[in-house]
Length: 453
Image (cartoon, rainbow, N blue to C red):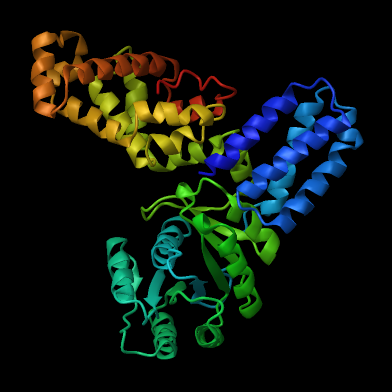
């Protein structure tokens, strides 16, 4: 996520850290490089100008000139101003109204509104304990209504029926009546994608907004569209009283321009960010954590939260007790750890949140990508119970049998055993119920506490 921008910043910071003191030329050179990096990331020129002027004023002030480490002081300023640019802190949905609280999603065609509708429903249901209903009034895109119905059923969310033959105004009126009757806490409304230059379609969504009186009107932005999406957000903001935005497809966005621009342009906060295709891949947008990732400092706090939310605490406690009693970490335990990595979004998701490792992440990920995780699990599943308990008995003939059973090569078996030995050593160091969380909290610099991958 935002890899292109992160690499540029990393190079700039390497130069800045090398200066014992910062001259005006050093500062100008750094700001010129920052300007190029931001423009290449598709950040709006108006935003770049304001951002760099603030950096310049602070860089030539006392907080840098009197610092013992002026390069680090300037990096700290850049980090603080990035956070400020993206909104200081996460702003949650305001749902304090008489039920149902209506959340209206608007945006361009193909921005991912329908999938975001379901993801937001899952978030509110699981994190906020809300009774959520979904409804689609997209009568223009073939299959749009059916798509939302399927997503609702797959995620055990309530769905209010609508038909392509109905008028969008009638759909939302009926949805409001049903949501009140069935005592839903939140009603999420999916709308048709529209261009801001389409007067008729914009008039329609304004009338839907008038009928629904939503407490939240969110603009859904495909972050990979960069500046085009931000310009559209600004235009929608003039037509609708937007309360915030949701960035989608951020996992595929190497630039980061939308994330750095949309808050400044619209004046409205980014409330959520989508980082994958699964129903759980929608997270509150935390400017400080996003800035940390962009600057190559990782995002350990989010990773710790994912570990604590998505791993089985009972199993972790059993494993901890087992190791404390002197019993060895075996291949069955290793298989469980690999499956937990997959449940957390795979190795790439973990690596990009570890500080000091992002620039190496692509190299590591090629050695242990998500397909590799699946292969390792298949190899362990092809072993006997005795082999999983005591890997030392795995000799040449056993390796041949395991390779044949898992559709892999003997070299793959050897690599797995090597990774297992690394993991076994690490588990001795972190043998308590919060071992992985503790390990991550201790991660710093370029040494991720012996992380074996």
